[in-house]
Amino acid sequence: MPASPKILLVDDSSFFAQVFKLELQKYLDVEIETCSSAPKALAVLGRHSYSVVLLDIMMPDMDGLSAVRRIRTMSSRTKIVLMSSATPDSLQRMGFDVDILNTVTFIAKPSSREAMKQIAEQLQSFLPQSRSSAMGTDVQVERLTLKRSSGQTTSVSSDIACVGMVISTGGPVTLQRILADLPADYPIPIVIVQHMSAGFLPSFVDWFRGVVQLPVAIVQENQPLRPGIWIAPEGAHLKVQRQMLVLDWTAKPVAYFKPSGTILLQSLAQNLGSRALGMVLTGLGRDGALGLANIAQRGGKTIVQEPSTCVISGMVKASLSETAVDHQLSPEDISIFLCDLPLTGQSTH
Image (cartoon, rainbow, N blue to C red; front, side):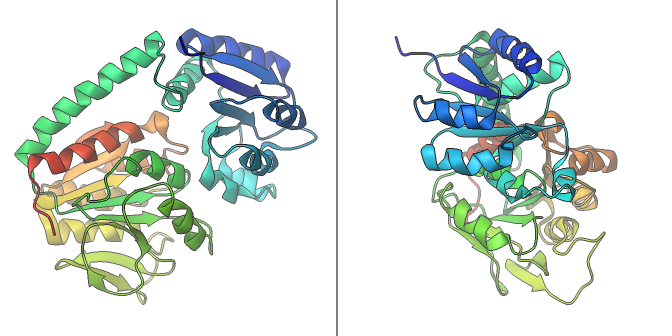
């Protein structure tokens, strides 16, 4: 029988580490080892392999963000989960280099047993599937049920012409979880507004191309809408108009955002109506909320990320306050939903 997966939990509070370890072991069939500092964790990682390293950001000697770069040089396959009581915005104001958060999973440090249980559910997706705890079995059953029901839903409206996504803090890793399993010939164009720090978008796209099978590009000029992953550039609104991707460099920001996710989703509603699928995912603020409501009004499909799976759920909650959405799904279940769509006979482009 294969050995259980292993998790390394790194936190300078031994009390927190022991409580968290006991809670995780209630739900996950894993071996969990603890370290009290990043340097000690690096020494352990030099001798042993782990499926997941769960790392606090705020630690003496070496913070978790700095440790990530060292861990990456030791193992590219180890999943890294960073946790902090501070938000990414707060960390940035404190002088931390938060761009590294775009290459790992970031979670709010749990302050209750219920929050620890939710994190266990997230960690399950990172672990080898050869062994499953009771929770792992339950999660798999839920996903298979969703796959059947989403197939029934999309058979009613089987001609989705474009998927529009709006996402901010926590976006890169969330997009990886949603889009990595889509095949290279996936026929539905996916258009994304991803908010991130100025100048970081090209690096994100370079990284993203290495984790998905579909072609990925920043839209540079007006072009035909065709299959692939198309990302709005910095400083321009991106719209879908008459089977074209159209850039607007001159319009003002909308609610401080340019590109604006609401502008993108509104263009899908206006041009595609019931053939539009709009999503609002993890992020701070309200971008995309009104655009998602417009898609719902025109008979299109709407999805928001399940709030408990968001790094920051502000955009999702704003969307829920604007309209009744069709689905609230985890990133993994959004992936299943998208994989089901082409099986029901969409038109391709």
